Image (tube, rainbow, N blue to C red):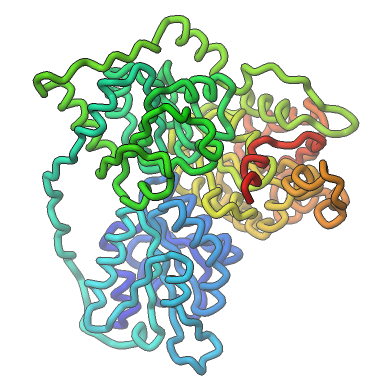
Length: 544
């Protein structure tokens, strides 16, 4: 049996049921072995799309995304998406064939490439194939993106057939986190806010219970949007996307507990959102988080859900521990959150006109029109605040935010991966016109797969971030503005249904599509107004 076949069999034994990629000679056998083991291969048009599909799949399903690519250019084509996944702590395993002979035209120094990009690299050894693949997969399950090097000569070697079973994973140790620094802060706070990030996505229930005990308000980073949906004390997203009410209440907090959040510049508005007098506690399983924000006063190492449960036990059982004195959860505040807690509750002057629609008006109309059970995937760009702020999601799995590396063009393929993970939900891909054009080739993948997919293009005929950042100072904008393009016709050429929206009535065909079989993706080319700047982008540029 070839080593390549053993690699595929081991991953199949781990339960891998979807693998995304583009097949070439270097990954032909390993991919076929995965398929023979029960996995579904989802072919992309380009490796850059394939990696984002695996990323979106992992974020939405909660499992490991598996990517299979060709050696050399197959790997390099996927690098931007791999870096995005690594920075986002996406559990992903990249099957990366290697031409290790420097004279090969396919040769790249993969170990040093991975190191330079901050990605964990591991190479299989012929005498330890099962152990190496098993270790790489286990590392991926722990929230890491792993590049598994598969040298071509090693893949081709014949070894004894492997039929399993896998060695059992080590039993979870009953490690007790040191929650005293957290509990002491909670018992002294009157206006605590829990700010949950990506590392808290699986900890909704214990965090809500602890927040109820401490009278804490609940907020999230953009990466965890939807985590506390339905709770009356949920303020939604902190930072650049925060509603005026959320920003007011977070700024008034005397204690901010960051649960699985690095408190980056987006979440804290470059640190200005959190009061200088507030105590800041960070809870995270990865110690690196503590070094990313200078305001951390106390740090608790451990799994977020586990720490929250132990903090509850401490409050319940430890003699002499006073009850948290939080007093902010009043009926009046609960009513304010109910009536002012969403961006659509904040009045604005509709700027639609002259053949262009206000993006807020567009997004609110879509929010009313679309089914509640949805997955919203947002690409990067000047437009990104509108879907992030005005589209609701049913839960934390319903929001996929590809912003860790701030690369334009990852959203469409990420949405396809999300659609594979949750075919029971409508997937909504929110893109800018720049990101749409960068990734349009994956529309052929969308047409081939036929998932229930709505693609909304916020089309301002420009790279809007640069327009709004440099335009006010009088800089020439010719390099970042483009002639209006008929994106709907482009989408139809790929086999999608499509329409152009310039005013609210143009959205009527979306209702018809929603009522039908939805067997063809629908692309909405929304010609949006672009004269106003987006404050979340100003936050991004600040300090650069």
